[in-house]
View 1 (cartoon, rainbow, N blue to C red):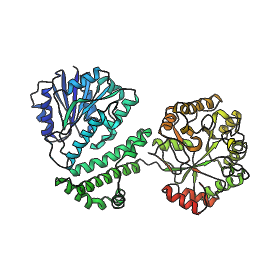
View 2 (spheres, helix red, strand yellow):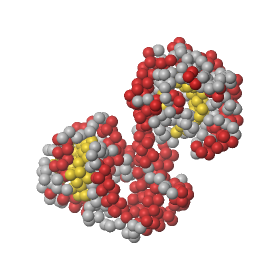
View 3 (cartoon, helix red, strand yellow):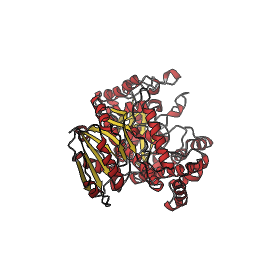
View 4 (tube, helix red, strand yellow):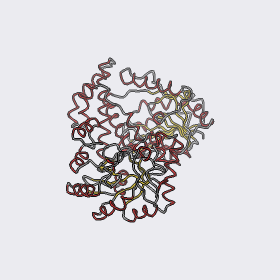
Length: 566
């Protein structure tokens, strides 16, 4: 058998009956249909079993466990070479299976098709929006050279070989646990792409979406979508940039009026939510109805994301970035980047008195992975460049207090000097050699990479930058050091391409010098740090710590007013 059509359904008896019957019109005849009733309790399974169809129809019942589990159950019952997943609100065009078969025959591993609005869908704001979305999607994906993105690879209509589906482990049921909505298709598609499989869009593979979702249910789904996107990033941190495309408030008025509802008690947003639902149910599509309803959609989406972050939180850690631990006050370039040993010791004592807990990299990575909880007021110390004074001055002070740290070495210049600063008129500062770096590790300071030659990676061709990142790890290992787990961007500069190169080189996290607090769910390849400078008294350092998560303009203004330099 060529195809197994898998349809999960939940409390849509009449709709799924109609759409299963419509499959009888397929021009491709070699297929079976498997409908998984996800605990509907409305007679769906019995009604399906009474149908007379020209194709084998298998009906499987399960307790309500969500769409992902229903699809997995259907796939396990399948006999076909290819699995075609259809939602229960999709009515197949007669050529649907033939077109999927053609795309697979032409080399595609995963195929999705066009999903226009079914002409019989009840009119209204939401069905109108779905129609616009489907038309826009089709136009975008049929442009010359267009490739489907993750958001285009939807289980509403998706086919893949049964062998590949099983090899990938099926859908992750955590995304639709307890009947929740959304996320499992993006996660699955991302795993398809990571496995090197080819995804294709076939505009001639058509299933018409009969859209009849109540506005109240739509808002609930929006919240679940926000939740699932956060959980997707927790599972795949490299997808953190997806969150930037989430619905947002587009005017100052909407941000002021609706923004506070995201984290407010549930009852606070109830009146506006009821008003938005009533307006959408009325069938109106005027600008005011659209603004109100989709503004509340943004509230619900962002609230779902916030609730997911709160549920998954493992605590935050503030990361301090030091450079030299020397008095460089007479250097025209590096004066601020040298914290004298006495001042460094003063910082350590003041931080301990204020209740900060010094943690190691293991604790930070475990928290980012969701495996452990960080203590309150957690602090990680890092040092860029690995100057001689790190071993001679800082390491003894850290060892006395049993404080762990991470130091980032310039792998291609070990035993040399700060060649990147010399053209600017800076004085020479010697870097630790291989023996010195190994002594750091023996002293309990983990060594990470700061690149091969301290070059600003964003100004290099991506192939050259990737080599700097990749080769630096190999060079440090060749010195007898453990494989570096983390990377610090030279000059603090990175972009998505550089972050991807760091990730692909096997590092587990990377640090910038942008202020902030490290928390699970953030971009672990652009983790924030607070630079500590020579002019930072303990009081100024406390202010920097307090302002770490403030909006950048406010933070800069406060620090400028107190003469604290970034």
